[in-house]
Length: 308
Image (cartoon, rainbow, N blue to C red; front, side, top):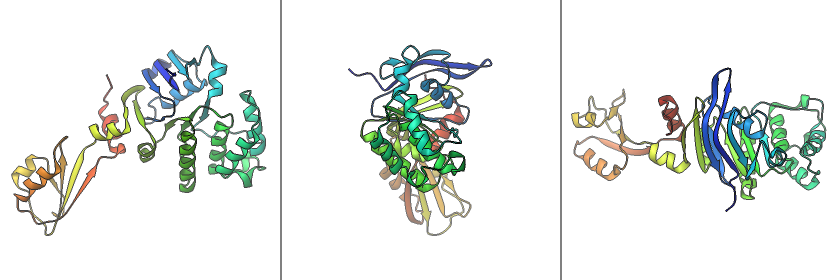
């Protein structure tokens, strides 16, 4: 049986007596796109820095494709590429120079065809001979993605890759991420754009105050923790709702023309519609909506729920 791409066991890190990461454990299987989410200060970046070897582990262990990232650090560093949230560049190198140098930091020979592919896919060609200090913020982020991939890592970590970038780059990046994932690269993603995580990730872990508070497939999170609502638009305003509907948590908007009813888990839409007909409301239209990942994220982090 092959080793997972990443195995974190009882990982902890304390700064000045305050736990930044507090005894977390999870694995990422080879070929996954895995989301690590959480509010600011949740411990995501500290976790990523420990995986990448930038920050010393406080307690616990990290294995990357079966290799311990402390005792076998040369092997694990070559297998991981990290695009950090902060823009980290060599101001006075050109893009062309920096990409050629960077592969050598990992003891990897320059692969010209791979380098050219990164340059083309990330739209860096017209800017190759510009020094970094003269690049726009979006171009610097494009370069950082190329830099993280130049040594062909098997595990790519993207820490807020689309923060502050335009829509075009966002779509370019996700298309490329899907492409390299389809070719076998495992992806660990953090993002505050939760609709991106919902669309991209196979599984999601949510951190808060250094702890894991959820770890599920994206589908399971949306199904088990998400609520469903009925929005009922009325032909004419009503002043008040029947008492039985109020007892079921129904809410009427200020105009008296839209009724919202939250459905319980397992409740059939047809049964609810049948009961609504008994109230003889002037119904014009009905729409259903499911909770987004963003709503579930807020529900979990604001409640402070901790995964057992």
